[in-house]
Image (cartoon, rainbow, N blue to C red; front, top):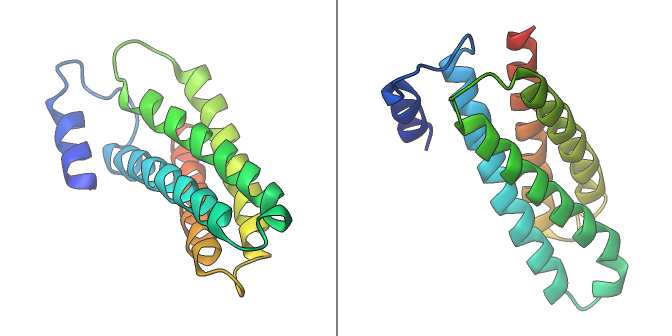
Length: 136
């Protein structure tokens, strides 16, 4: 997935600014993958017999999915300087992923979809942290 993201970043006539293209591409990919995984986890939780016990997990999944999707979309845009917004989004995404991962880890032994979701969230959390550190 990062192949096409990197190719598009390289093809942009304005360049990518000062961001490390590989870290940027990895973070964009992690954000979109996490968004999809969290959405799928929420849907899987809704199909469980004990859905009421998973209400917090579903809400956390959906919040994280939306935050990751927005972060990935904004990171993809390269026209203009929005470094303050990017930093804020990366911090919010990192936080949402940490909260969602912690919630899903509580259910991981019982629900495989929660285990997978927690892994995707931790991966995205790391990608956001790595990109943030490269911007400093």
